[in-house]
Image (cartoon, rainbow, N blue to C red):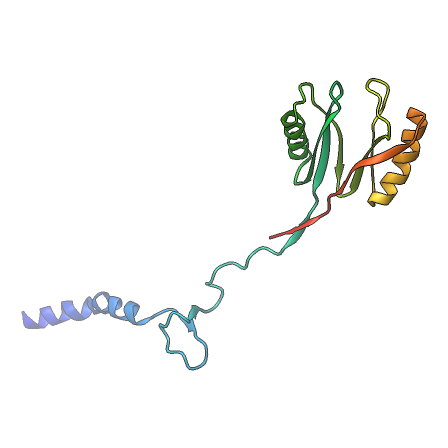
Length: 169
């Protein structure tokens, strides 16, 4: 009887001892020199840590203008991450000034833009000119000349802005 009992224990010994070995087999830890394993300064070794953060990238931005032709109100936006968002912001600003029939009329991406109008604005016979370019100066020079041709009188830049890429994580 005792002999058969010891045989059963020996036969099942691997099952009894398995939890003891599993407990003693801790994960490898990477600790700075002089730090005791188990400290909060230790990290799991061998790629078990958190994934590295994504690399920063450049994201292009949009600007837009919306105008109410009847009142001359112009809403603008800049630095938006989509054409739709830029137009929506410009519309919101145009309507916020009192525009009732605001419509998106110009948008630009990763560029500069200007609004040029005649110095002497005559309701109903003055045409505003919207242009974009690599710089405010480039856009202004083209727009001022075109505005003068369209309106038959001197023009001025009423609005200028640039929208450029933004570094995002």
